[in-house]
Image (cartoon, rainbow, N blue to C red; front, side, top):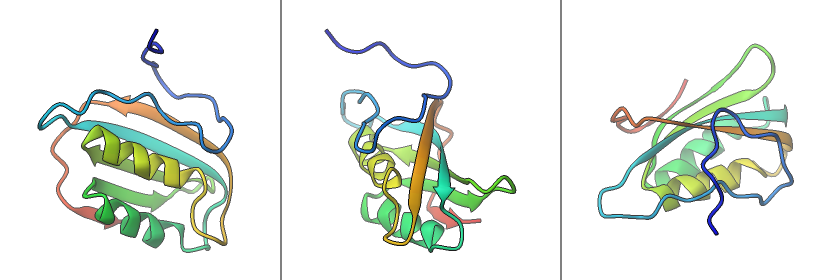
Length: 116
């Protein structure tokens, strides 16, 4: 039986835990907002995230937050978005990811991927 859809943010879980996938129907797009906590600023997280997103052809943006977390918005095909979210659970080599919160949102048509 498939897992129910989540509402709001998920609790931080173990690395490798994936978000439930929406079927990859032709042209299907999803949007998620990801908050990553730990040692994630000053370790090249944003630029590495941009590279991952562009490799997966995912649109959106990434920015540092004043509270020390990194915020990422991803929009694109469900499987591609899931792969970038999975990457966020580890981040670049110098990062230490302590938690990842993922919230589903309605797609708005992001274009390109920016570091803010």
